[in-house]
Image (cartoon, rainbow, N blue to C red; front, side):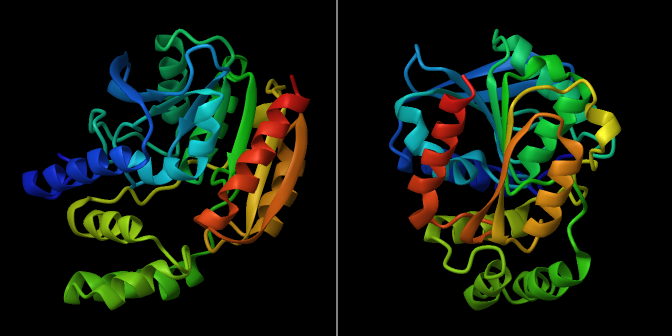
Length: 289
């Protein structure tokens, strides 16, 4: 079964994918690599001699939307952005079981097929859960880990998600009005950019959304994971509240270098904070080299 509700919906989301990569203004290369769960499409950017960073994007969203906040890093790092299988993009539509270690298996294949040795790995939201899944499954693949507004520590609180996102989303699906769409986004991104609104509306209308979050990782899952790790939670994150993220990160991750809160940020980090966020990530990489 396709992850898209119609061929026309798939075409629209892939069109938005291409448009948003162009909008980022980066020189990119595209390739496909084989994994045990199907072909994976990878967008690569940044200087060829830069330290490699593999970035796992947010769930149920096209990768350039998730990627926009780290474009400043592309001036000095070689960045690999794989489209997660089973999520919108050009990778195969194979749906993985988020309650298993299949995402870790897939991510391990991506690193191997890219020919990388212990690269820096970064994940945002759902992508951070994929990174933690990899840390449990194949910790030796990871050189450094950066987790931003991360899933993978604990499930999100359901009541605020239902009342602040779910109900407005249902109203949007019925009415197709912009006001309902923006209302459904306000709790996770109070002042969304127009391309974000457009892409999310297309996802709501045309994607069979993956409802399951990556499995929660526990201390015993990471006994062999020794890579230096940075965790950045958002102060106003409706999905993954910072208090629980920071507490669990300190309990679970053996080599946690820092666990910090991005002040005045929603789940989707607003553009005004992108420069400082990239600077913090760069400093972490330099200090742990």
